[in-house]
Image: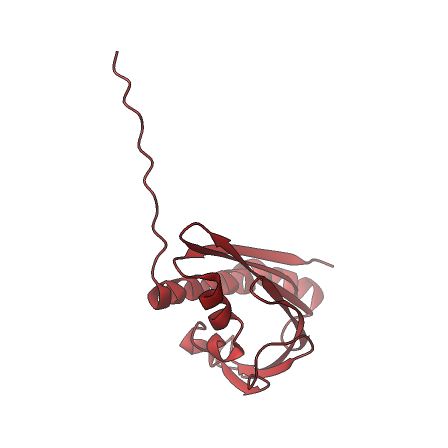
Amino acid sequence: MKIYTLKTKQRLPISREEAWKFLSDPANLKTITPDYMGFDIISGADREMFPGQIIQYTVSPVAGIKTTWITEITHVKELEYFVDEQRFGPYALWHHKHFIKPIPGGVEMEDIVDYKLPFGILGRMAHPILVGPKLKEIFEYRKKKLEELFGEFPVKEMHQKNTGT
């Protein structure tokens, strides 16, 4: 059994409260998901996030083939983190942790996704050529979209000290 892990971090120049308000609202998932994924929420996104919340989506990850994905919000610590787990859908396992940490000048968001593919050896063969690259592409899209919405985090330039002798 092979379990894969995808980790991403992103800094945004917004408050922890603003980041939480946006990221913990399931309705905003469509905004930060590529259009070609055909992402639509069927039910469960009509209230503030809570442990035990079931959210149903349709998504078309490959060749326009529509599939239903059902996730449960299993853990919520307001302003700090939440966890969603797939109950039914395209993965044999999907466990996605979302962390929000205040830093000087904004927030650092970290996603850690642990996942397992179905279909045994065929799933493992598909990972490096299809699934792994597609997930990285989706999270890269998410990063760019969040920067469009909230701005880029300023990078401080490091200056070398000139010590002439």
